[in-house]
Length: 134
Image (cartoon, rainbow, N blue to C red; front, side, top):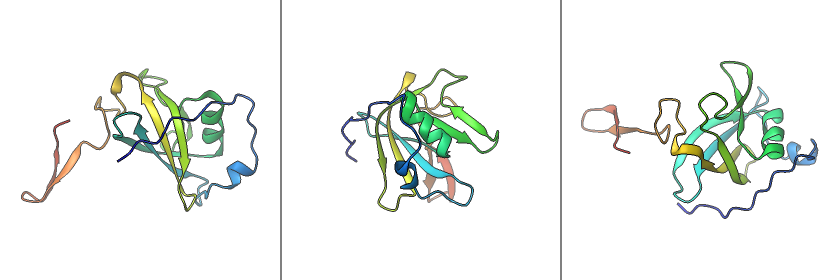
């Protein structure tokens, strides 16, 4: 997979507007977000954003998500220090998924300490999920 060029620049003064309305928000007011590592192209994680999270991400240049379990904004790395600096941001053709191309601090995106949250692979022979080698 090709990694998109890095072209994002945070804008502390960006305000809500038509650009937010271009996103197709689900019934809960959320949009799916995929974080991809700049350079390697590795898919790191999937999370959700609401309008406030996307606005804050655009303003500060670091990934801010919506935590469905805590029902609050979640600045990625606020506790672990494993922040995601946004290098590029894309909206898919349906407007219902955002791609963040990020510089992952310390190379750890998953709360388990793994590089990527997608470390379980399907073992067809055993018909189960197995931890794959990173």
